[in-house]
Image (tube, rainbow, N blue to C red):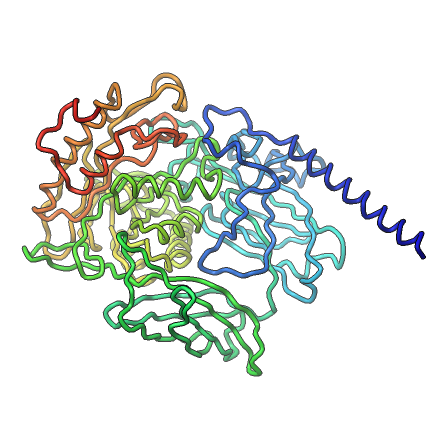
Length: 612
C-alpha cells in the first residue's frame, strides 16, 4: 500500500512538471507580432493572464472560467472546410491583425479565420448547464463544440451565448472550433472606422475574437437579464428580471446595498417590475459618481436558490429642460450641466480594438477626468462592458454612437435606401446596443448616425430607440443631415468652435470641433506624413492654441450651447489630433492649464510664457 501511495505521488508530480513546462513553453513561444508602436502595458501581457477580470460587471456570477489565452488559428479560403492543421497560436482576445495577438496578419473578405482550443470543465460543475459566452467577435461567427454545431452569430459588437451542455464529453478535454468571416468595408454591416486599406481617418481592420471568452455553470432555470431604471423624481429604482423559464412564476429577491448596509429588500416574480423606494437617494453625477450595489436571487416555489447575480446602478436622470433664460438644455438630475469631453475612438496601437488590459481602459478615463472633462463621445465603436463600468465608477458621462456602415450621404442629400438585409442587421445590432448597455448610468445619449454615414429612415430609427429606451436622449444625426427629430441638433466645425441656432424643443450641441495636431517623434504610428486638422510644432504652441480655442467656446454656453466634443482623446494610427499620443505615453499639452481652462478658468492673458 505504501509503495502504491509513493507511486501515485510520483505520477502526480510528473504530471505537474509536464504541465508546468508546457505552460512555460507556451509563454515563451508567444510574443507580440512586429508592429509600429506598443503601449507601456504590452510588457505585462502573459498568455496565462490576459484580461482576467469578470467581463460583465452588471451581471456577475461567482463561478466562471476564463478561456482567454493561447488558441490555435488558421487563415484559409472561405470555400475550404475546417483545417486539419493550424498555422500557429493566437492570443485571445486580441484581433488577428493586432500586434498583441502574436499574429499580426490580415484576413480579408475572401478568407475565414479559424480558431481551436481545448478546455476542461471543473468537476464541481457536474449536473449543471454550461454556458459559452463571447464578449464580441467581428463579424460572422460559427461555433462547434466537440464537433457539434452550436450556432451562428452575426454582429461585431454584441455579446452572445450558447448553451453547450449537450455537446460536452462526460470526462476529459472539450474542443471548441470557431470560424469567423468579416467582409470589412466590402459589406454593409456596422463596422465603424475599419477599412482594408487604412488612410487618414480610416483605421486597420479588426477580425475575429476581440473580447473575453468564458464559460459558467448555471441551473437549467437561471436569470437571463436585468433591466434597471432609476427614477430620481419618484425616489425609486425599477428593476425587472427575466429568467430562462418565462412561463413559470418564479420568486425573485432583490437586495439594494449601500456599501455593507442593506437599505432595501423586496420579493417579486421573474418577468415582473419591482418598484423599490429609495428615500433621499444619493445621486450619481460626474462630480459624485455614487453607485448602489445590487443582489438578485432567483428561487423556486420551495425557496431553493436557482441563480444569484450581483450588479450595481446609479440614481441619475437625463432630460431636456429650460434654464432661467428660456434656453432648452441638457439637464442632468434636473440641473443644467455643460457636457464637455473628447471624441473617443477607442483604438490601441498594439491591440487595435482591444485594450491591452483593464488598467489601460481605466487610464483613458482617468486622464479624461484629470484634464477637466466630464464627458466622452464613444465614436462609432462599442466598448467592452468594463469600459462603461469604469465610466460609471469614476464618473464620466457617455454619448454612445452606433457603429456606422453602408453608404454615405452629403450634407444636403436625402437619407439612403438600405437593402432589407442591411437595415435588418443594423437594427438588430442597434437593439443589442441599447438593451445590453442600457443599465449603465454613464450613458446619457444614443447617437445612431454620424455625418450622414449609413443614415436612413431617421425619424423611424429615433422612434425605435425611444421605444427601446425612453429614459435617455437621442441625437438623431451628429454632424450634418439633421432631420429635426430627436432631442439634439448637432453640428461639427473644424477647428471651430461654432453652434447651431437655439431651438425651442431641442438642445443645441457642438458634436465635434478642434482637431489640433502635434506629432511627437517616437510615439507615432509612422515616422512621416502624419495627419491633423491643424498641426503645431511643440507643446507650448499646442497648449496656447487649445486655450484660445476654448476661450472662444465658452461664450457660446451663455448663448444656449449645451455641450461640446473636442477631437480627440488620443492619436489614432496616422491621426495626430490626440490629447495623448497613441501609445498613451505622453499628454501632449500642459495638463494643469488644460484642466483649468476646461473648467472655465481663463487667465487674463494667454501667452507662450504661460505655458512653460
